[in-house]
Length: 450
Image 1 (cartoon, rainbow, N blue to C red):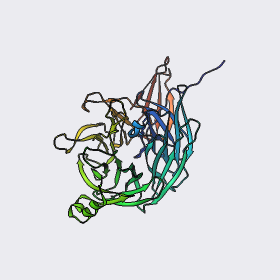
Image 2: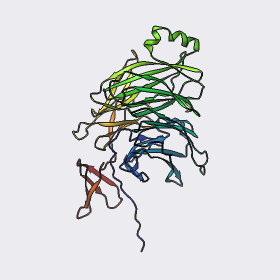
Image 3: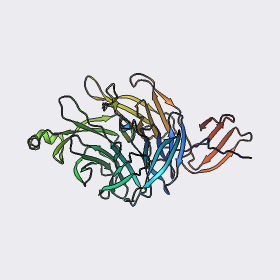
Image 4: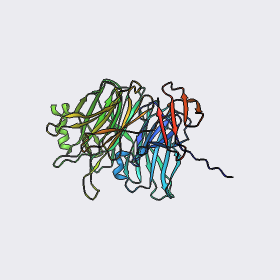
């Protein structure tokens, strides 16, 4: 007699740390659950699998491509995931579909450049076969890598380290990578951390990164940075926007503009207007000027996360895309906000606020957009997820959605009810008891946290 054993339920809470969650272009979410990487599907509100491999607490995850680059991932057969842990180890995972089966495998372990925990991973896709990512650590180092993704299913990823930066005794805790406007193949890396400053580095795709400038304005630790995609306004030079958030409760938007010529650059450098606008830095043959575009005030506690809305299609054929002027922020004040400029004045305003009124929430550690921008997700202090979906026409009707849940600390005991109708679990998190009701015929699961 053969007995089939199948997994029907996974319950896990999100590790209590910033930068732990990532929403991929494949519309799956990743997060650290103790030493494992958990994958959950927002459509079914179920955790699909957990990926073992780390020997220490998982601090951060990042999809290749992430939701920001979903417009470049329409025909991708495979997606990749980076995860970093408290020992400084970074693993690269591959996700693929074969014969309607989901396949996961550990592609490689990134050569260890960090002696302490990884605090952040940021990545960009420059093509379907070429990606760059940067990782920061509490040991005061930042490493930049290039990943060559195989174009055929049998190929293997190739990894090369472009540079490792020493940032001093005050480590960086947030990073953001971007391609600079212009046809020079230059990258920019923004990093922020415990010195209250934003540091901008520039470098070639194949070379070293150099310190370009620093931005001052925040009065506490920098907690999140995110570059927009290049903005191309008719009759104007290409620009980038960088959004930053801090424990000072404020959000800053910085404008990075490509200067038209070196002659204009020299004139600007000697003028008072240039001093007011902000620093100028050079990358290859181009020069860029950074200025403070806007200051957003609205949160009442530390702002742990800011993220630009993913690009949207602007043509019928689905080839051209544009960067929406919309920012999602998440704060320890238990709210997420969507910020947009007013159509008439151009002043950035809070257009949407969602949050958690429960005394158990204790604030949000991060907020993320779905690839098509119709949903937003936050993860909280107690390892919980909070998901809202826009069911209106114009960002005007956000409804809560089901999410998976579980303990965020070690489970100390579990026990079935006498008739098997529910499972009771207790944990060292001292926050909640997980009650799972099981329908015995079709194995659909309903679970309640209390």
